Length: 260
Ligand SMILES: Cc1cc2nc3c(=O)[nH]c(=O)nc-3n(C[C@H](O)[C@H](O)[C@H](O)COP(=O)(O)O)c2cc1C
Image (cartoon, rainbow, N blue to C red; front, side, top):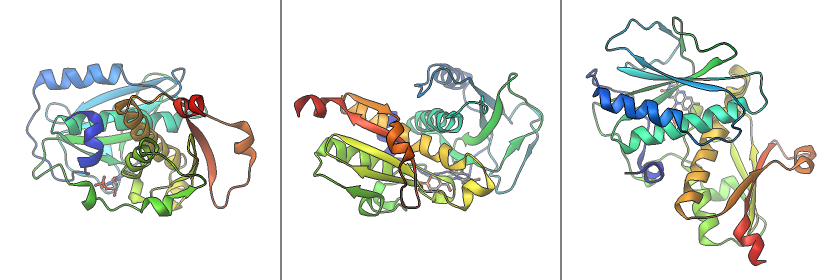
């Protein structure tokens, strides 16, 4: 299963066997982490694999699942867009692992006390991973998600390709399943908005992280369909007042604009 297909089948896994993964598997994961797609390549990041089968790793925080490994995602939080970037990077790794039959679960409240990232970077997310006790896949119909009609304001009719992007976006995981994304949809572009929840108040940047996770789904879907898209921030739209929402970015379908 590739990362795009995994969008439709992945679910959070909270029960793990503590068996070690093959060293080659971990090496491939490290390699994947070095070659992730970027939204803003100038934002520094680091991915560490915390191996609890071999090392003493001190983790603190609520709702912790017991797992043999964790991914630790760190970014330069002083930069604008750092949390969006972090979510975008993290979800690529999560889907890569799901495609290899390895379970994952984001651990939003967890911190590692005895491993620190390089200077200037801050750990922003830990993700449990490993072989699961039970099934790691489900059908998309079983995913608890808001309907597209509740997430989107359709301003024009759209084609199948744009609809596929929205369907992939809808399935993204989010903290407490809050699904903060909202979409203003035109035939050739989608304006992407975020609706903050309590989660962003207790965890500043939490909504941006979720939005980055969701953008990863949209971009993977666009790549799968060989669509030519651009993600672009529109200064004017950022100034607009949106009902209960904040503007994040716009997705432009360049092909559609050429045809019109
Ligand atoms: C940023 C983020 C933080 C999360 N934190 C936790 C957590 O601390 N504990 C947990 O059990 N699940 C956590 N989750 C998993 C969500 O609860 C889960 O993705 C959501 O309920 C949807 O379920 P699904 O992933 O099975 O589709 C987190 C997910 C995200 C994206």
